[in-house]
Image (cartoon, rainbow, N blue to C red; front, side):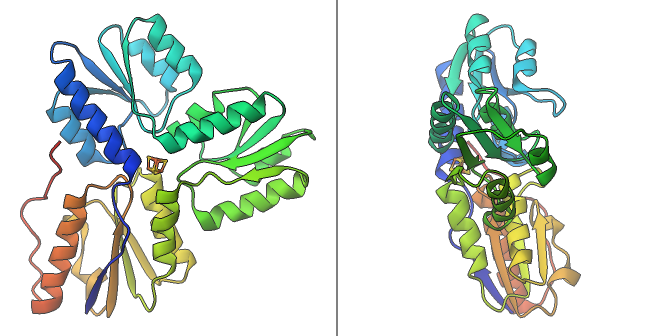
Length: 301
Ligand code: SF4
């Protein structure tokens, strides 16, 4: 049995930056209540590590970030790497909260692009419904239209001067279908794909895997980019692709008899979790003994 550690994998620069900002904010404001508006990244272990240093999370999947702000009346609010709309920023300032912005520079780049174009035309933003990044970006102007499926396109009139762009963490392969559908309806539209480099190179590394029987993606099931990696594996023909949160979700039946197993992880997954999976599998490949660890290696901020 061969265990392949896919490279690159794991934390992207935007996530590392957001985690650093959260940790330094906790040090800088020891006497203030510090709130994170939504999950810092979609990973339960990172959220837990932030709680350990005193950060409180305001999270409700049924509410927008603008609504979530109603639950904060004082202290510090941190915007996550996913970014927020101008309305959220203004509301936080109007409430006299100390604002700390951990928006990823790649998301800011997309914000600048769609703001500029929505002043002169319309933007079709290919993204996921209810995802915080899509909420923040489409909230920047009424002329930015979220396209999550082909039905969303049917509802739109024949706009002039259209720009088609994307959420940063989409699947390279899946986005192509929606992009083609958008271009069919708006053949003169400009296209600016904004899938970020970190997302792109992690998916491309999976696409290049050869003769792999099993792809294991370590990541939280709520993490869009982790799910996309597993989907990418399926789309390029890897027979078995599984998403696990930690080493204890591995089963011997999934692994046994596989000749080549590749392991990767989403850009929100701490290295500690992935390293533990790889190390366990390498030991199993050597001695054939299925002996899962008693404790999970957790990230510490
Ligand atoms: S996945 Fe891309 S856009 Fe999202 S935080 Fe990482 S680098 Fe930034």
